[in-house]
Image (cartoon, rainbow over all chains, first blue to last red):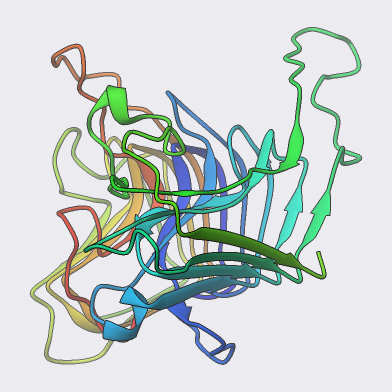
Length: 187
Length: 120
């Protein structure tokens, strides 16, 4: 799944699996671009989930080399079951709620380290592409931010959500875990 | 099947999985779809299900409903340098208050639940 573009999409540009942590040769999801994603309680450039066919993803999975701009919610996001998640080498531009990841904790990991890392990403604020047309014919101005702080909870989300009460994706519906550590390097 | 430089429009059936282009149980020979345009359909743009050995490159899907391209229960699928645009909400759903449709530009091995796919 490489070098594709999803534009003007409802809910999510891509719902795609991540790759093994540190394996940047993987072509599972690489070089893709999403922009102008919105829709009813949706608007994520990519929802990146741990590949259920890879046992290692229960411990750690990674999403990398992805670009998103003008997403209503996050450029990239995840709220799925794993011990660690890394989002790296992404370009996040002018998304309303930045990007980030949460984790669903499994088993009894309350005091084990649950790790969320955002590494080597480039985060841009306003882009040269205006939100509002020059003639002012319609305009939606929003408060925006670059990074959504993360956490882990005992309930995660399905990639395809069919219950309105579970939306938006980043809405936390379960108890939090004490063991969560978020690290951000070289962004 | 080899499809190259082809335009398809006004295809796909509304409110079904019958997409503009479908691969179902296509597991024997290699297939490729390249340099083609699929646009202005009524439902899904592409549906690859229970299939294998498919190469899709440099195609466009424009103006579909709820799902642009879906890949499920499949193996050895290459999806490279394609554009998926203008995938909108369905307007035909009448459901309970709490129901929300499944929607996405490209959805990989998740539409029908967590699924076993390899080499996508």
